[in-house]
Length: 330
Image (tube, rainbow, N blue to C red; front, side, top):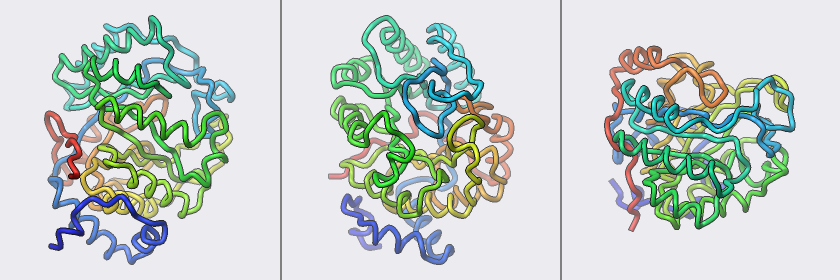
């Protein structure tokens, strides 16, 4: 196999990504599966657990989010959870097969003080359980990223959400550059990066591919790339948005796999509405990570039992231990 084809690239153009995306599906899946097998075990799936440690009341106006203070969605504002509650949830997740525990707080940005100190304790506690620890806390400064790294944080999630051309149709309270700056702060602190986006928000295919090209342009690539299908929540500006076609999800995942061959590509929000067959196609396209548990922050998600049955029916298995490779693209 051509070595240049396997070397991670950071110069993908929109035209090249579109050529990939628009291929006949068998051709696209053949390419993405071949690349997937070069870097990953095709029968292993990283199982992650996500907990909302601080819910609702976010100052951002993300059009998809029921936790935004700008919309009436029925999500109650809740304060930061106690450290012991979070660690109890992490223990349960570990016992149910999760190798990574992700903690999400509905903040626009991290504020130094008591709450941030508690988050640092949570990170330390999760690592002591032998799990990877991931946080999504909004924007963070270089100093805050450094403190999270010192606490042992494995990964930081900060999604781009969509392509730069469509971004201001979805969010006006934070710029695209703000998001890229937080990712840079995380990377420079030595924390691995988790960054992806959402499809089905009314964007064009070109917007999705632009997002993937921006992510693939980062050096190194994000270690984790979550691909979410919009879950249209009542009360948000996108509540009337039609569900995304499953094949579009498959094509997007396949392109993410080809553009970022070493990354974990996470099949994230929207799985609860996908058939077993659709999820299987996503795995064949190169997805190798899922969130387990009945809620994904505030949205519905398949139960652990359903996921066990899904993986068993496909002859696949949860990955154990540290399932996220550190990028080494030199």
